[in-house]
Amino acid sequence: MTSGVAIVGVGHSGFSPIVAGLSYKELMFEAAQRAYDDAGVHPRRDVDSFVCCSEDFLEGTSIFDEYVPDQLGAVQRPVQTVSGDGLFGVATAVMLIRSGVARVVAVEAHSKASDIGSLGGIELFAMDPVLNRPLGVSPLAVAGLEMNAYLERTGLTEEHCAMVVAKNRRNALDNPRAAYPADVGERQVAESSPLFWPLKELEVARRADGCVVLVLASGELAPELTEAPVWVLGCGWSSGSASLESRTWGEADFVRRAADMAYGQAGIDDPSEVVDLAEVDDTFAFKELEHLEALRLAQAGEIAEMLESGEVETDGELPVNASGGSLGQGHLFEAGGLARTMECVEQLRGEAGQRQVEAVDVAVAQSWRGVPTTSAAVVVLGTGEG
Image 1 (tube, helix red, strand yellow):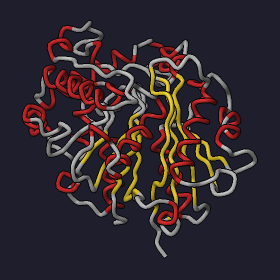
Image 2: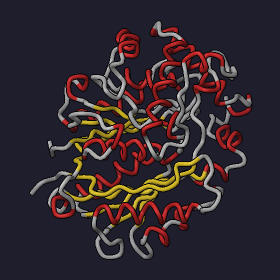
Image 3: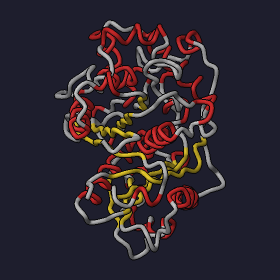
């Protein structure tokens, strides 16, 4: 008997700045259909539990999981609700399977960002209610402060952040589902409108509508469902301080803790020697660099050379965000982590088309919910069970 867990099916829908003709239910139904077909399972017959990742404030509906079962095929079936990014849902599915509660689990997360009319107020509501929220500080202002702190600590420059934007928007040109592909130059990034110094407009990922559904199965069942299972080697999660005064500035310590948990489960001591592909959060361009360091894929002093030498390009030694990341695909809110995981799955299967990276055996997907939160999850995936 094996305790392994594998991703056996993936499906998506949307990935557009605005999906005006479809409701969130229709996006979920389409993504679920594709995932079930990919896994060769029937939701009513084969799926034991369903995990929905959503945030009531973003949905505009209280107890949003009540609106989930119909389109996922989960009516009168076990539904687990995670108020967080989709990678937390993957961790929940892994625990359900490893505990013996379920053999097959479907994980869903989506974004209908075009329907959100009060995002600023929602983000403000996530601030510490006593010390921070009354100040009315914009989340973009917090991002600018953290960007400045990160650049000051590492010695990296605004030019390096512009290189991230250019790379990811360019990578998105080879991704048919990307919402914001473009041949953007570093000078264009530098000349884009200032937001909160030193953050520029083009360094912020733009919102997108979309849905992703993953199907996970136990190690015994996975080989029966697919010839190319992608194994979950490890997963971890962590949160930092909720208040601005007590958090660590310019360093993603919560990502480091989540990564160490995932690497420990995967038996990886030095990820920089093992990981072949990284899909990391780049809601803000500088965050990609900060997260690479927190994931122990690069030291701060190495990142500039990695960018300048092309090491993080699709054909480089450590491709980062070959999908285009959130800067290229679009910011999918709670579905962001699943979108990165789906890219890793396609790369590990050799199904990524023109953006396919050579010789991918181990990949890392990482999520962050964005300002003002400090929660992150990391999943290590591989072609072998480990």
